[in-house]
Length: 386
Ligand SMILES: [Zn+2]
Image (cartoon, rainbow, N blue to C red; front, top):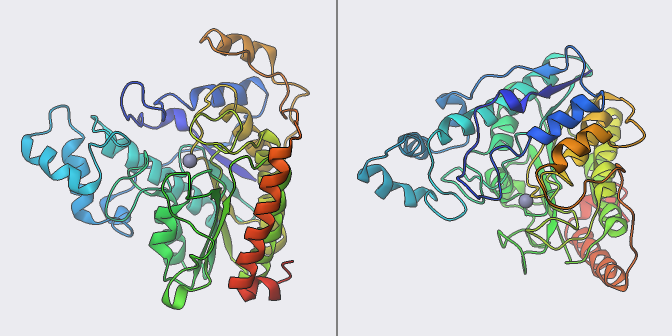
């Protein structure tokens, strides 16, 4: 069984007019799910906002107090003066009313997914409004206010789950989650992202493998600009499967940012919806084979709200729920959303591939990166990595 957070029911996550993380970015997704016959009675999961006590499992209570103070229509000068200390009021994270409530609701939605998965045998759950992986215990970063995945993983551990594996497919390094668990041997974090040489947040090198007793449990696969589906899926398969075999998680939490797509305006990987579809199926199969199907998936980045996000995350939901996709993206949906302007909306779920010499060069460099990771983390090789 699979459950889906109804992101339409959550308060708007508002980073201001014109911000790339648009407040209505998930509406086309839910319209596509309905149009494609992918929503049924009993799918939608109702969730509650995270409480201060739940947020405090990861976040500094003084940061939470500050975000609450700046989330009103007219924050006073004292609140605004304190805000920059917590990463608020920057271009990436401008201050706007309602932010605490929206961010706490996104965390509560991921907590609801964790609870559903732990409470029901064979239940999987997806929160498209989650995956806010850059938020740090001590502040906002990269469009992210509270880190729903880190809070969700802490809650699973507190509920008695011995080991959690977190895998992050977003084009940006999953730095907030890695930082939270960098010295924790019970949580493995694995991030595939565009190399920090060129991409925010500038962390996640292949040599960064965790600290202290958590050493070897933070894994990073920085990918070359120009990486396309073939190399991306090869890297995921080479590292994720042995990571699951070797770490033996009891729960998998995955972040499915689709800003790896070649049309995404914020990055320069050249993947398509084929890579997103591969990741969804690969994680589902690993969860079924190795941890009783316990899988919580979240959304994340993605700045092509009409041509990429709806197809990528509708396919993720169809994969999780085990439902067939219609032969094509429904024409009615395409016509409705084309009225917003911009290029035509694709009729095919999977984009066409376009081989290029740039992709081959990136693939060769990525193979060397994975070789370097395997040399630095011998337990992956013991678990069958090649
Ligand atoms: Zn991203």
